[in-house]
Length: 277
Image (cartoon, rainbow, N blue to C red; front, side, top):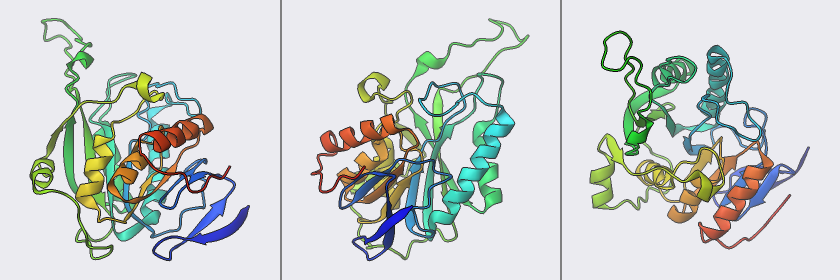
């Protein structure tokens, strides 16, 4: 299955395969199930930034987003276990998930997933509240003006910040490109910026470039390696291109791989140096 091996800028050995959908000197898109891919070496990733499926019946092309909650947590445990193995000892993990969910039954998604991550071995650092300013989500009232059965819905998402072994980061270039203003603003536990347009991006659940851009600049050095196991429309790799980081995105759906590739070329303003199908 593996055809050859190439070297990255740092001399790391990364496998090449027919499932590498797109590649430049710094970035690559892998068209494969994250749980099945063997193209990413263990202990090679500085930062994972991702927003996995929420299990709220979003209509993806190649994934059933409406499964039994127990099975959803089992799936979560499997992919988190693999992610843990790919991180370096001082690797960080920014996981964008819902605070909770009410569609299909009330579930404490943030608590449940964080608990699973800690059981796997991840260490907890902090939680960032992402306020999209989307008050239109408050549509489920339960019992109107009554204590009989009211619903409480928080129109926010969270970014759970985890790490593998050591929070202090000795590896990498040691060069940060974050400004004083950015550092002061982003080390606050509440981030205020809007979401992304599904229609504009061509994906049912995109997050804005601002989310991975902040995570990347705050938690990595320049030239570090960033991974998104659920690449979707390519947002994390666009942020890598704009911040001079190396990046790998894994996406199971070929249509979304094509969307990500096109966005990289246009929005990331990169020159295509090598393209493989």
